[in-house]
Length: 221
Length: 220
Image 1 (cartoon, each protein chain N blue to C red):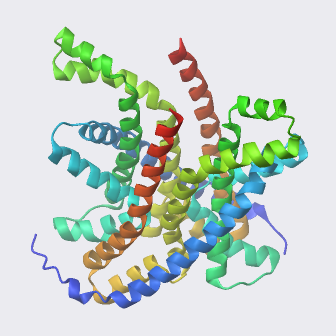
Image 2 (image 1 turned 135 degrees about the vertical axis):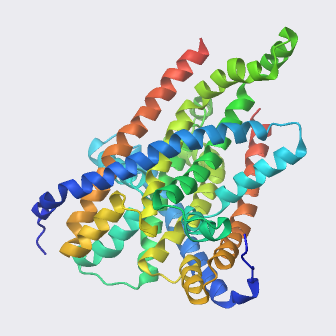
Image 3 (image 1 turned 90 degrees about the vertical axis):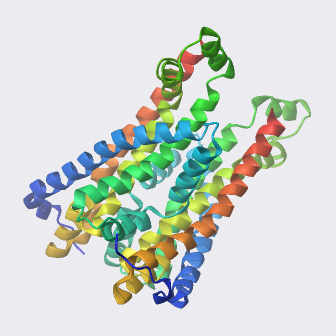
């Protein structure tokens, strides 16, 4: 068969629009998901067993089920449960934020654990209030140590965001599939879509390695 | 909310049929991934760049694109490009297997490189030849170290296998989707399906956690 990539030239704008939706969704969920993840990560070190239990169930459940089914659940069931109409974007944001919160909470938990017990003891010795302990002592160290893993979590989120195409959100994957159905040229269109995802995710994975090296160096001093 | 739940409306039969397909996909993909991931890891670490580069490109491509794109690509493009027509389950197994192969190759590479230099030096001091050093020192160490990551990757593929529902392989996710539209009971159906997925993957993640903790105790 003959390949003809020129058909794609007509669809540049549509693909760009789809990519913008993907990027927008990813960025919103990175911000919301990381904040949620940090709070949940903290809750899992909480002295109260109830808080710890709820946080663990949330994390285990979201890590133990496919993202696709979470997405379907939130798209089709949440409006029924809440009794309100949710826009496509809102459901997508909720689903991916909850997913991102679950995976980053594990990252934060690991990095919180690596912040030495002495630091906490020093805070207590200095008589710092709990809020200052968290924001000025624990948070900076935890974030610094978590940075490389957080960055890989962000890349995972970027990739998982393609799933929203399955529930009809017009992201890059959805636009690509539409174009491929309309032009009957799946090979060209899907290959380009895959290459676009690759062109964004690959440099980011290299950045993870760089950041990792930097931080290791800094912490070793 | 004024929704009355009716879990009886959901018949478990089709869901369990779907689970069997899902498990088949997972096991077959894992066999491909675990067996072929290792030679791929060796190719990535090759000193010859003509061997290393294509292998790295393969791995990076699978790691840096969404799994759903890979699966849709595989289902649409492989028959067109290569003129082969396989059953949908076989296609699903191949797509998931190749994906897992790339991730497992990375896991093997990391654990091979993590074998302490001193151990290899000790092998040299004992007068073992290079092949013996690889077979008796590097391999057993590396394989044991990679078990938790391999298990984690395996369970990730179990979850990713839900994606083949989009290309109409009749796995658990597909059955749940069909059942939800047939019965108009999306909440009950998707909740049960999610619980089934959870029931399979949770014990495995607990085992992985246990193995990792034991390893930490052993190495510290």
